[in-house]
Image (cartoon, rainbow, N blue to C red):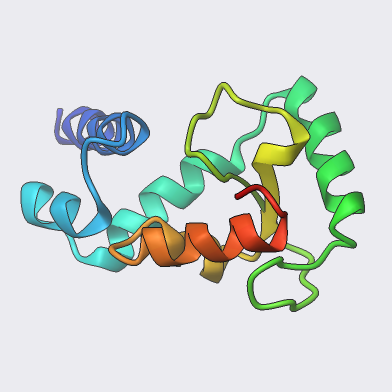
Length: 125
């Protein structure tokens, strides 16, 4: 029974984050997990891509030269980030390649700073 409660709690964390209702810091307070644990739960969720999304992901990775668009480092484990945080807005101008470290950092309390950097780099302002 404990395992099912943990799975449900992890799903609640993902749902709260997806709806943009909570920052990482607020999720830490609400669920009494360490920040790293919250980021791991969220990160694991987003690594599971649907098949049709992988084609779009490959297009974005090629466009961005398999390089994180924030720290400019090459990485074999890159994420595709929705700049406006609207997961249904999959136009290529709204998607950017990020390394796991940068991706997790922008979903924290410093989100507005990083979103501005990404918009400038992609000339979306």
